[in-house]
Length: 155
Length: 333
Image 1 (tube, each protein chain N blue to C red):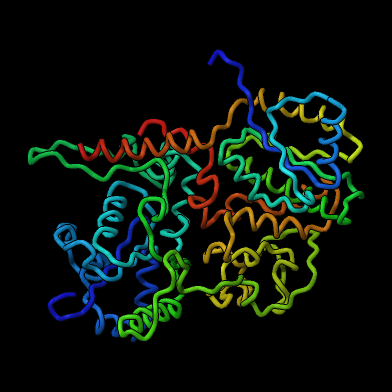
Image 2 (tube, rainbow over the protein chains, first blue to last red):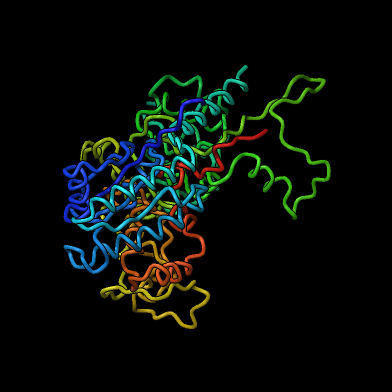
């Protein structure tokens, strides 16, 4: 592959902090790579690991989870729940052979547009270095192998 | 309908252990109702029948087929498609057929690793490193065994499924209840649930059926059941630091395991509305950890030595990822 690998990254943002930070980055015309697709949640505590696994299983190369700094959650302490789920999810996917670095948690307040843009840029480069995950392509390849086994036996 | 006017019944086992068949026989005298009301046309564990007999049956001639086991090889897939074609109602019966179950844990590995474990383990005497071959030429002709697939799939990943009946195995009282329902439907006294329903189980979680006392949970340490001196017989197991899968698991078993101080391991599969069983369980378990410090959280989580195996013990092939990354490389068969 001669073209540079462009990672597909899903970013989950909190309505009260990181979503506004991203908004601010936009208003202030701070550049960050277009590889990330941001999804707004009401809180990082809403982040069910299902969302992350769905993103990875449908073609994302990495997932960025963002929330309010510790102690600053709009809903008091739900960002801590996000933190705990994030740590457990990383352990679980590592056991499944997926690089845990493909999931990252970053805190960003509503005022931190510059910092968030920097974190996004860093994460995109980290994922670029890891290379593509391409889970759906792999699943399709396995299915083709299954068909091949059936055809080989039938022949 | 058969010659004696009875509707036809079939049961088949694919990649499974046979526990589902035992669970069906465990319904005791209710099995006589099955015999009185159905003509059993195909049930390899209980009666002699050949695949060609099934192939000769008219399409949709079997009223009810209970299919247990996952789809691991070419034979499993052939029978799944055949029985789908011949049956009016196809039930994914038991955890293997619905979610993949224990045989589905092989989806963490590739074929080479599976063969290595089966044919080269310390307890296996195989000095010539003999591996199964699809074809073997004999003077009498060529023999072949069913092709082994790279991963295990659930029944609904191969054919259209009408109903799901979870459990490893399904509880006998639930099987009896389902048979009662089918008999009522036959007599025009009841209607079948909508296609795709989970039958023979509850709509809540194991926790809701569990009689243990529950409080606000805050876990400071996970322990394994053999590390506990004495288990409090009344208190929620999770509150005692024992990883219990009750919060994410569908009800229907009357909380058999936690009632006798064995943690729920999740054989009844995801509770109603849950997309990915392991993810839901991670949500529940992680949120009650009593720490806000990343390092301390990690230290507490180290008390769960096998998270992927614990959270996906029964559901890996039916999870969002379906397999671990090693399964990608099929290697040399």
